[in-house]
Length: 328
Image (cartoon, rainbow, N blue to C red):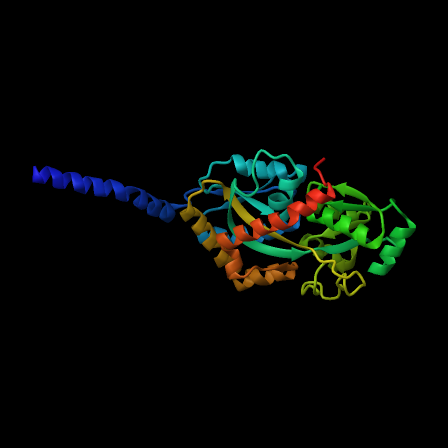
């Protein structure tokens, strides 16, 4: 009888240890196949460009290919919805920014909750917008641009990545502060908007880091940066405040999210891969050259990233709703 009882206790103890053992085994073996990272915007934008640099380095850390799939449309809600519906197994991830994971919750009727239906993995970039104009536009600085816009009300066009995006809100605030009026033209991503700016099809963009090459090439005019200080990547461009528009500063962030329910050990392994990548001097140099600000190691952690997202929701949702901005 004692032997049977001892055997029962041993089996019970072994069964209790199985979940912990399973988690350890999963963390050690993950990933065993390629990972898909959904970017909810068209190729060529700032988030897409930076993620391609980061994921190439992450591949060597994780030992598996990371496939970037661009799923643009509806201001990023289509691609984000794909991530929401994906299996929470670490093999389907999504890129998300202030627009997709903050503003959209106040603007659109969504099948998912931007806060509770995703798990932040890692914050990997912070950036500021560059107000750029088509090359032939008859203004070379911010004051000349404001004067031209006032002389041509409702004739100019601002290309953005969609309704409720930060560039859209930046445009609304710019008009309110300067007493100007221009048209809003939403695109499927910043890449197509910048291409149309270069081609002279639109007049203005608040560009993410993907506009920097066009600025350096002289394909577009850089008017001002919407930041509190000049950007190291383009130090010759003055801030909006330097140019006479006090307090006009907009920053955005981009990070990696996983579907709700993704195991914490997998989140941890992915976060470590991002952190290792962002610590690499070569990667850091490339990102800084693009105009990207690299988050601190503490900011990169899932818990800090989640806190940032929640704080932005609490700050911006009332502002967006008071402005009456709704998805088209």
